[in-house]
Image (tube, rainbow, N blue to C red; front, side, top):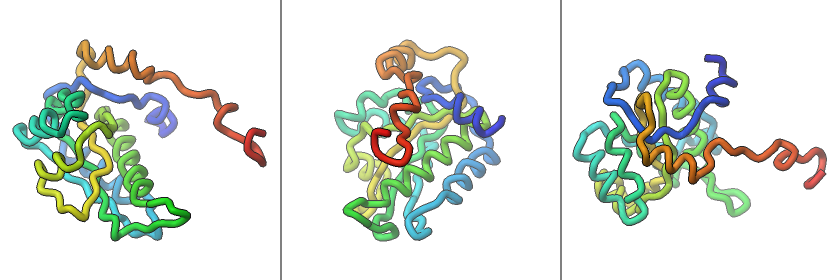
Amino acid sequence: MEFIDVINSRQSVRSFSNTEIPEEFLQEMFTAARLSPSFQNRQCWRFVVVKDEKTRSDLALKSGFLGKVNFFIKNAPIIVVACADTSKSGTINNQHYYLVDVAIAFQQMMLAAWNRGIGSCWLAAFDEKSVKKILGIPDKIRVVALSPFGFPKEKDTLYAKAVKTFAGSKKRIDLDRIIFWEKWGM
């Protein structure tokens, strides 16, 4: 697939087939994340890859009240939990760059996955303490996001269709509302 086609066609996936992700594809995804830019090249990102069925179910059903909407992730072949070692990043202008670093790396992982037909869904609705407890993540590490990864089912579940409609996933703001030339608002 051409790179622009990967970007144009990528979408959040909430219905997964049982097909296992080939190891070669996983390595491509992880390499894409590893090669992403970061604050002073400190590479603060860390990823927990969860294949175990019980652990995936625990993440789906026991990651706090917010996480209850993520019940669908237990059906994906893997869940990747994107974390940051904040001591490996930095802060400038009161902005903590570990969030940016992990976001860039996770997005590159998702795009590499989509290039191979593997869907994902960026999730922020989880209780960090619960996720840390389930996965044994140290206190000093921040959980930034998590995502299921897997090949999409041929047909979306009713839940996936409802969320897609509710979220307005296909809607995008016009370029002339987000790009300013020379000065703000111009």
